Amino acid sequence: MLNTIAIVLIIIICVLAVCICAYMHVQTRASARGGHIEPHGNIVVDLLNATGYYYNKITHDNKILCIKSLTQKLKTKYTDRIMFVVKGKNTEHLSPDELADFQKIAEDLRIYIYVTEQYDIPTANRAEHYEQARDDFYMCHLANKYKCKLLTEDKLRDIAEFGKVPRFKIIEYAFWRTKPEIDFVNPAGIKIRKPRLLHYESI
Image 1 (tube, rainbow, N blue to C red):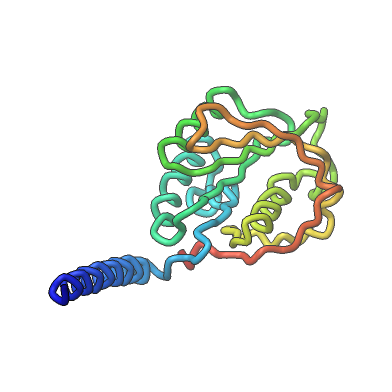
Image 2: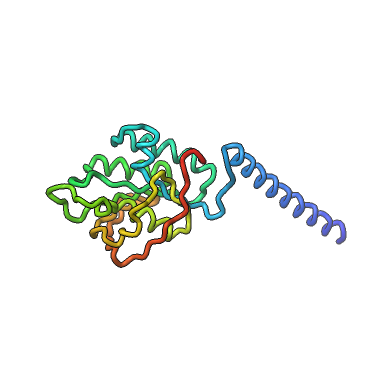
């Protein structure tokens, strides 16, 4: 009887030791890459801002390259929701081919991509910057919702005006869905707090 108990205790101790070693190994690898595993595992990424930062020119192909590159980096620290937010030009919607690319890469990389599209396409660009800030608004909304950081170099100086952003459409691509989910957002009814900002040089 005592031998059986001793064997069970030894097995439990060995299992705990293996778990602790595995955890320390993951933390060490993350530290070598510049940080630790984030406790919540969520992060929001400003895709247009990131694409401009890393590739200078914002094109669809560069957006895709940016998603692939950043996802590889971020997955060493963020183990849950990696969320990219993007918008098209203010006078047009993204093409079906561009949207299909977002669906595919979301599935392939097991990430989330949110496309913020204008509900009504204007005949000319709006004069006020905040009226075009639907992607900035939604990035902050997601960061507030998931209590996580926002990866961007944007200062979010217009955040006090986000309640004036016109109603817009959200197309959400999730890796576990074969088709996007579509919703409509009215910023006037959503309170926004400035999220914690993370800069590219720190990842």
